[in-house]
Structure formats: C-alpha cells, structure tokens
Length: 477
Ligand SMILES: [Zn+2]
Image (spheres, rainbow, N blue to C red):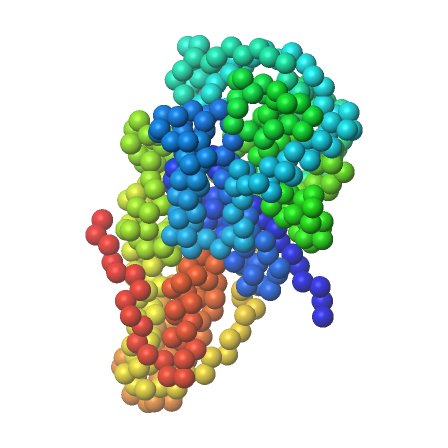
C-alpha cells in the first residue's frame, strides 16, 4: 500500500488577553476546512491550535480582572476551546503555553541555544508598548503613542539575552528565495526578502528581567530572566508534537506542511522562526500562508466601536455549518477585505436556503412521495478537480465550483419538471441523476459543512430515501 500523505497544519496560537472573535474564527475555520479536506482524501492529519499565555500584557489583563494570572489564562483558554467546539473545529491538540510540558521544552530549547553560543548578554533600551508586547520604533508611533493602544510606550533599559539572528539571515534569505520555505501570497515573500536585504533585522532580545516581565518561562541558565515571548510562542509548533522528548512522534509530523497566520506576525514566522529552527538543526516548515485583516461593515474591528463579532453570535443566527461556509465564501483567502453583515444574509439565502437546501428538499420529497428506489453511482472524479483550488488556498473558488454545479442541477430539475412525470422509470432516471448530483455536491461541501452535508449524505445513502427536514430556514434581511 502506498504511504499515506501527511499534513501537519497549524493556526497561530491566540493571545489570551483577547476573547475569541471572528478574526480568530476565520483562521481557525480555514485550517479546519483544509484538514477535513485532507482527511477526506485519506491523508494523515495533525491539526494544531491553542493559546499564547505568557507576557506582560497578560499579567496586566489578569491584574485588571482581579484574577490570579494562571486563573485568568485558564478562563480565557477555556473560552477559545468552547468557541472551537461551537464551530465544530476538529483540532488534534490544543496547546497552551503555560502547560508544564511546553515550558520544560522551551527551557531545553534555551539551554541548547546557550550551549551553542547563540545567546549573548547585551544592554537593551527601547520604547516598549505593553499592549503590543513589543518594543516600538519611532516610525511606529502616532503622536508619540502606540496607534493600536493609544498609549505612550514605556522606556525600558535592561540587560537581556540576545539571540544572534544576523548570522542566520543569509541562509534564511536563500531558503526563502528558493521556496524551500514557501511564503504565500508572493507579495508577502517579497516583503520578507526586502526586510532581510534592507538590513533592518538585527540580533534581538529573547529574554526579560523578572523585574520587568515576570510571567514567562524561567531561563535554565539565568535566575533573573524569563523568556520573552517569541521563543516561547513559536516553539509551540514543535513542542506540541513531542519535541524534544518524543522524537518518534515529532519526526512523524515535522516539518509543518502549513502555518496559517495573519500579516502582523509575518516577520516573526518568516525570519525568527526559521532562525530558531536552523539553530536547533531542524527542518523548516514547508509553507507559510499569510492572510490579511478584514474590516466589519467598512470599519476596523474594535472594542471601542463595539463591532467585535463573536463566533457564538454568528452561530446563533446562521447555525454552525452556514457560519463556516459564509466565512469562507466572502472573499479570496489571503486578501484584505470587508465583511458585510447584509452580504452574509444574502449569501445564506441564495446559496444555502434557496440553493442547496431547496434542491435537497425538492429531490428527496419527490423520491419519498413516489417510493422510488435510487442507486447512487458515487463517482468522485469531479472532487479531484477541486484539488487545484485547495492547493492554491482558493476556498472561494471551491465554493464557486460547487455552487455552479448546484445551479446546473437546478436547471436540470426545472427543465425535466419531475413533478409532472408519470412514467416511473423516467422519473427514477431523472431523480436518480439529481440524487447523484446532490451526493457529489454534499461530498464537496463536507469540509465546509461537516454536519449538514453528512446529514444529506445519510439521507441519500439510506435504503429508502426520505424527505429531508428543513436544513436552512430562510432569513429575513
Ligand atoms: Zn501597542
């Protein structure tokens, strides 16, 4: 038997200083559709998501909420886990960076860096925004304030351990240029290459004095310092699959086939992360896919504007499957775009209530009424043709192809008008063809709508096809 393909796919780990919203949901649903597609093809899949729980910003949020920092992390991590359960996300593991195993692995990674002479103690001074969890440069500031957090950064000067990044840059540049680590879309690859060529990437600090940031992983060789976020956060992608203690498991999955991320963490994933991996003599991830941010009804999503959409609100309105479908059908994955609530309703009614749902209802109702026996041919070659869109991360085109196939079916039903056909053989032939079309369309929809598409498949594959219950009640605009 041929060796199975494997697919190790990750989302970024989400900061627990924020509650799960539509932005997190979007990336996580994208990953889930991909892994379900791979599982359907018979590939061996590991899907990872989780939470990033260290840093000053989180300790600060915990303090404000009056909770112990760990309790605060537990509470917020649980909200993410609940949200993914609600959205039917099929992750194989949920990593929390405050897990004991992860912290021990991070400590070992630091020890390795130290032993290899890749860390150096230096004086660091910078403008640090607690909200961003990073040092900002002059050009990041608007009116002397962090534009995201509307506050002045604190000046921080202290002795830190610096990671010797610069020595890895020529190698990283070469690997990116040769697409050994593929960065998509290509505009993002060029962005990263310019950063390297401009010479702005320098050795950088990977630790903090405990006096300035206490909530982090202790360094094994320096009692006064804790890990500063990036080594801790990025290494979740290897610690989650057993590094460094369970190398059999690790070697089964690593390198990652795909890291999904948003543009604000591009530099860290495309430059720091490859450097850490080279330092550990590990292979690099195969692909990074970077998606843009989206606005909500034309405005940037923000707590102040009050337009933050929680996954649960969408699920309450559209149901789980339709929410997943609507998130991915709005615009090409990767682009910056705008999510419009009215488009959600229009799309729901057009594609799901009047489209898929209506076709299933029409066909199954007539089959039940006439007590027809339907034989499915279960031909799957058309499904293979969708693979090219998946390879290009064009979920919108997968959906477009599915919808045009449904439209053809709709045209066929209208033309044949089975409700007028009296000859049982002709009727069986027409509704048999329609059932086969619904079967293949449902197979194609499974990664997007795992519950409802499966429900339809069960109806079609039953000994006697019965009328389907209402799948997508029409919504008022
Ligand atoms: Zn900030």
